[in-house]
Image (cartoon, helix red, strand yellow):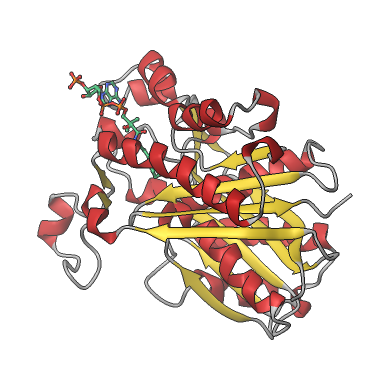
Length: 329
Ligand code: UT7
């Protein structure tokens, strides 16, 4: 089997910053509550004329450039998102034409905050088997468009952004070493957007009741998240024949600093080994991990041979983790 790794990364976040002080004016909350309960200080909000494909395009162009791979060479585009521009065509189709990636097969993938993990796992199978050479995987969200800005329990949490990676063949023994994916649909009601699909199509009533926005039973999702960030990381490490002592960097989904802290404590990691940007961007769902990854790359934090664990969890419920041996100098 061909070893598959990340050849280049990219990220884009919109210019507009929404701070905790701004949120204090919108809902009954405080900077102190938000920082201590979530670790978030600000998040980015897409401009009115920006949709997910616009954010994805900027991140994808950067990832391609950094990988030294042209759009025409891309065989497959997977976009992980729960906030596509529209029901169809997909964001990946819109992106394909904007990039000029004319030979690429394209599809969107819906696994919420685990979407990026599902995306890289899926794309890497095609490269491992030799069916494809290069794949572009993007995690992108405009969560501000599905946020209920009068609900203090969710309005403070989410932000917009995009992260992208180009996957391709790497030296044997490097790249993705293992994957652990999972789901529990029985708990789907804990985190959902009820309307806008075939169950509750858009109507005056669904709009009036704000059923097109995120509903979350935060406390329950929190407990689930703490459980799976640990179990999926342990599962992926085991499959790679590794233990927690082998982790050089943990790049977790940025949902709540207390969830990340629970994993850090469990694995006995020191702060330098954990990539955190939640204070600047909040929870960007499928974009959180690739944006954090790209920023760490740009800061020069990884060296060839470092063992990275990427771990995501969210609506569905879904989760995923991967162990990646960094292949770039
Ligand atoms: O990305 C997908 C996965 N998502 C997650 O993993 C999110 C998981 N959940 C969480 O991160 C946390 O549950 C939240 C940050 C959403 C909430 O934190 P919490 O510590 O679980 O708070 P809580 O829901 O238990 O609420 C505690 C109190 C309540 O007041 P009472 O009932 O104790 O009087 C809430 O009404 O805090 C209140 N509260 C707030 N107060 C000020 C809830 N939201 C706010 C707020 N500002 N924004």
